[in-house]
Amino acid sequence: MKRMSNFSGLTVYFIGIGGISMSGLALLLRSMGCSVTGSDLSMDNAEVQKLKVQGIRVNHKHSAENIEQDIDMLVYTSAVKEDNPELIRARELGIPCLERAELLGLISLKYSNVIAISGTHGKTTTTAMLGEIFVRAGLQPTIHLGGVSVNLGSNTVVGGREYLILEACEYCDSFRFIPSDTAIITNIETDHLDYYKDLEDIYSSFQHFAEIAKSVVVGDKCHILHSNILIIGKSWSAKNIRFSNFGYDYDVYREGVFWGSFRLNLLGEYNITNSLFAIAVAEKYGIEKRLIIEAIARFRGVERRQEIIHNLLGVPIVIDYAHHPTEIKASIGAIRQVYDNPLIVFQPHTYSRTISLFDDFVDVLKMEKNLVLFSTYPARESEVVGGRAEDLAEALPQSSFIDSVSEITEKIEQEIYEHNIDVVLILGAGDLAEKLKCCYRQKPL
Image (cartoon, rainbow, N blue to C red; front, side, top):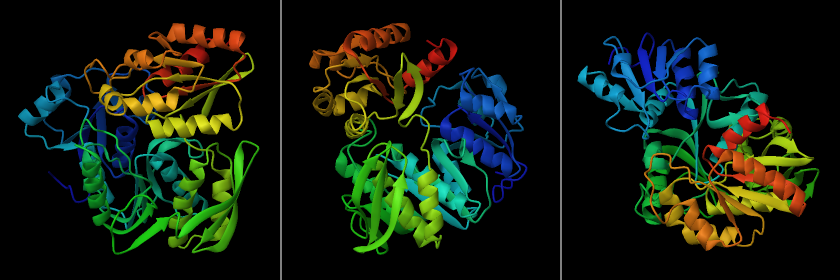
């Protein structure tokens, strides 16, 4: 591949360029002097619209005709099937084809300090939080997120070449391509069993991610081995946590010694743990304590994480990306610190996850008296009986199953009137949240 050592002058084509990571990589490559185009089936995807504003051409059909001989590199994700006509044509023409994570690994080699954040839960928020601290400190980091930071207004910030702060996804062992100066592992739980064999297999993958890092910062239950390791919950901890005004005041201790008092304006005590990772790494890189405290206090989170999208009849409608039982439990717990009578709407994400964690989903949701289940978001999978929202509904007799957005909106209004609902919490990583955002934006009630 020509000039791969510096990327400048390359013509790069992205299949699925509207994806949250792919769109960010497209912007990063263009900042390095690449000519970037791509395809995405979505016409109204927010990231696609941002790319078009930046002058990047996006085809809305996967076609072999889109792939021309002068393309130097094609980038795709694990969601792209082998029968994709653009991927087939690129290979016929001998164009190098890279999976998204492999490209991210190559990009990371261009930066002096790479901080890679992974974990089953909390990696997007932790990445955004750490990025906000570095921005606040004037270090001009380049940041690559799996979500949109509210503070930064983007999933990607093109900064200098000194610091790259990136979210490293564990799905399909993608983070194996990313050697880092500092790796963060927030936590490790059973997930993605459509790829991994079991929890032991997942641990093996995270262990390798740690081994290709110069130093690691891990949660106290991660059981990762490394010669240069910092453990959150032991080396750094939070005490004297006080909930007030939709957030928390708390004291941070380092090695058992008081280090500073913090304010975090987010719901969910799990976000305090996320902040400890960001605080510890920021201190490791010499950022002034005052700036860390200011950045945490002004941090407003990530879109689709406890985000209020509408107020219906005075009742807030909140969306959260929670799609794993642990995340769902934490999200509902955070909401219940403020509201007494929530309506929970959950869209399962993939049939394989629902099957493998079925009993855990039931345990988390069985106590919710106001519960609606929406059709499973299949992502890359074909329907499997036993992993559908309908199957969860059968195991949760107090729930209602709905498979249309219009019926969901009607159900929400009905529940608010009939059961004095004081908040609506939409959970899941599928398309329901975005559809509801669009619905309420176009038809305010």
